[in-house]
Amino acid sequence: MPYEGEFANYRPLRRLVESERVNKLLGSYKIRSTSEQLESLQSLSPIKFQPGDWTPNYLIAIDGSHAEVDIKNGFPGAEASYVTVASVILDVAKIKQLDQQRPVNPKEFRTTEKAESIDCALPGCNIITEGETSAKASLRKSIFEVFSSVRMSSEGESLLDTYEALLKYKPTTERKQECPYEDCSREYQRGNGKYPCPCELSRSLYSTDALRIHERMNPAGTNGAIFAEIMQVWERVWVVHILRTLEAKNWLSSLRRLAIVLDGPLAVFGQPAWISQAICQELSRINTVAKKVTGGKDILLIGVEKTGTFVQHFEDIDRQEDGGYGSFPCQSIALLTDDYIKNNIIFSDSQRPYGDATYFGRKLFYKTKSGARLVASLPFLTDNHKDLKRAEPSQYPRLADAVGLLDQLVSSRFPNALAPLVSANAEAAIPLSLGNKVLERLAKELITNEGT
Image 1 (cartoon, rainbow, N blue to C red):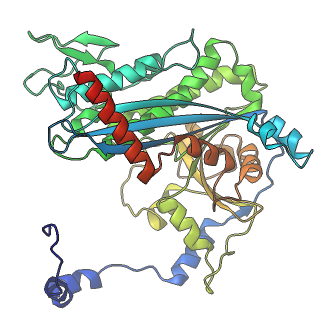
Image 2 (tube, helix red, strand yellow):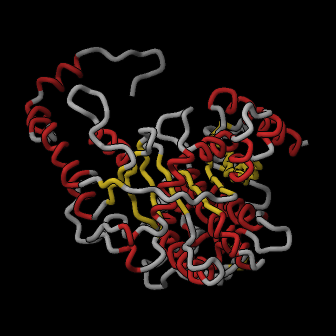
Image 3 (cartoon, rainbow, N blue to C red):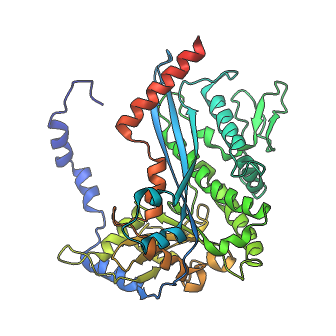
């Protein structure tokens, strides 16, 4: 790494270019040709698919954001993260009604959206909260407190209750977890809520410690990766929380006219990946109950990806020789098998199905009537849906309704985007330049006030 103000010269670059080892390594890389890309599209066999005409009365879109800021508290590298998860409720029925009365009064149109959010500041490197002895202990306590304080309904269960319902699905046979206190030799004892460690010091443990997010905390640097993990857990547990709240209030029949759209794949990555399988089991349970009051209709939950290797691959196979797009027909769908994913998108010779430990849904490619390319996921609601050796329409719950909804909701403001997620992102996104200055000023004021 150069010193501040020092600029690199060309000698290292020349040395790399002339290196026999580097040239040998680069020369051994496999490069896919244009003809192989065409073969991928042919093996994928996109099929023309008739979208359903089902329209929800309401749609819930969920997206999150996080931003890390430096904190001046006398310790070098001190950092906090502001995390927000927004859920936007769209009155789709009213939007359709207003659409027939153009021009629409903007003030009236704004009434079709209602937003709520989980907003918090989490401690990072060198941030110690009152009553704690380390940044890691401070983070663990803060995560637990946010879970405890958030709920969809004032008289309903908290997000912590939802999480602890999912925790019951966590297998006890997985690798053992150490106590989060470095000077404790005992294994972590899973429990509910806040409870004492069984050692003689009896320090606080939390049910949320089972997420293991704190284990990756960097005590001497930035921690953006773990804050991203926290955000993705809150987004996905919030989906389950909504459904469990509807169940508790005997409102599951509303799922006949409700759809939920989540930013990103139906998956959980990193340390808390175990919770994806718990979500899968709980969605299946709720779906079984819901079908009794919805006339047999499954839950409609769609994950939509904006970026990533699957999005890039979809773009590649749609690209024509002249550089334009159109190889993949409009209103066509491609259902992905395990073999196709491993041979064409994420190379692997593993015997385990792709995403076996991280996904609670399976992917599809859909090109809308307007030409937008969407990488979407639909949930695993039965064991049949999980069989990635096959890719059949029956393995994607409410496939016709899902692609019909994608056609209706595709956004013209951004390429390959859905309008509801654009709205949710607008509620959640923190402007990088202006946002960091405002948040840093807020943190400084709060810390100053606490110190007086």
